[in-house]
Length: 472
Image 1 (cartoon, rainbow, N blue to C red):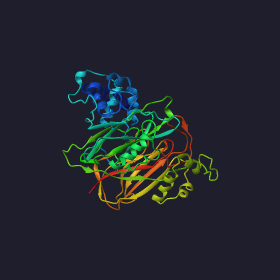
Image 2 (image 1 turned 120 degrees about the vertical axis):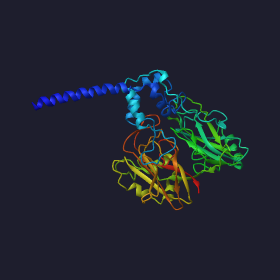
Image 3 (image 1 turned 30 degrees about the vertical axis):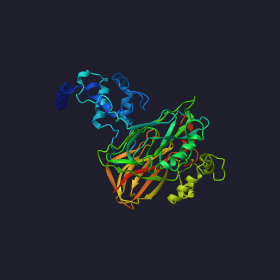
């Protein structure tokens, strides 16, 4: 008898819940592309997925979004898109490329419903149907002529002199670097030079055939680079607009040396590059504070798994072999002097399987200020990186944490709220490398483990960072 009562009760509840589900589905129809999805795609995807953008395909057409629904589902569920490298320990940043929980739920519900487009009349009046364009640049400069990277050099460093025609002192409030041969460009650094250094740069340019001049290791001219320089471009970087009220100061007559690092592994046929630089200047509407920089670098001593081949200098897993390949012994050894470390302490430590080899260095801040931005840079063996303020103390603050390093997605990040820094505070940069097995190289072929030290080549490594701040 009790069993029969429970059966009746279960039936009533099942029917009740079924009716609720029917009523609920009638009250909350499935989202359509035009009612909900379009505005999510526009705000979170079209920064890259547009015609001519950095992504390999466009999401500007509704039919394309519908066709790629299953791929979008996978990317959303696995937090792959939109790519946002800073991890949860990082402070909130401006212009974060993150999907809100409700946006994820909407996308997944839309896909589960069969990705209906709906009616265009369902589009909200405020729907951002296209990505917000950048303001019109105040000045655009480019190489005087196209340059074909030298295939004989696996890493071709070329410098080009750009004249922004600065008649007056000014502040640059943002920039946008647009590589012409994007598949070959490894990175770009913008060095600024004063007017009295321009003749030397022009002389170096004239001394070599073709556009620009070879400049492995630096432009060969007195210039401000990562410390006090204008900026840089790396794969995945968008246009950089400095926080409101800040800028980089340039004196009248200053020019820009654009150092482009081409990796030619993917160049089967000659390719002409014509990279452009767009500049945004101070409008004069608000006071501008000059941006200053603290450059951070740590030693790079990444070993192969297993016993170190100390006596075999022809072995790729020997440090001497690595130094001969990079030709940057002075920098590789000099960073140890700055960081008060030794090669021996890295070569004798236990690295396990070689998948988590951490390097770090701590610097002292010399003046009070407000930190407003941060960046970090490694190459293809990088696994994770972190920049901390006052590490190992009760007031420790993470300025940047990237838990899953991806060489193809790098950038400069600006804090949503400035972070106070004081004289004698400490800044530590940490880089961790995975050298346990093969990784894909620039040409997609596997790179076997070898000893890695500081080098500018794509298949070498770096541990480099920068904190941008304004003085107080």
